[in-house]
Amino acid sequence: MNRAPAWIIPTLLLTLYACGPDQAAQLLETAQFEERQTNKTHARELYEEILRHYPDSPAAKIARTRLAELDPKP
Image 1 (cartoon, rainbow, N blue to C red):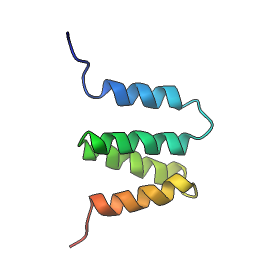
Image 2: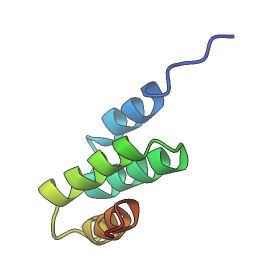
Image 3: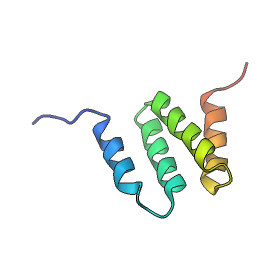
């Protein structure tokens, strides 16, 4: 059985959830999924998107924390 490329599932999740009422939370869920899949680059992009588009949301608070942990400063 062929496996779908790794980007298809998160893309489908993001597309399906994009119409929902709480897009910031849905982006956060996808970013966390990407982290669990060790795709930290894409997770970081999603966290940054949350901060750009939904800076005052509860998801933004979590995104800031996760970005700080993904990019520790020396």
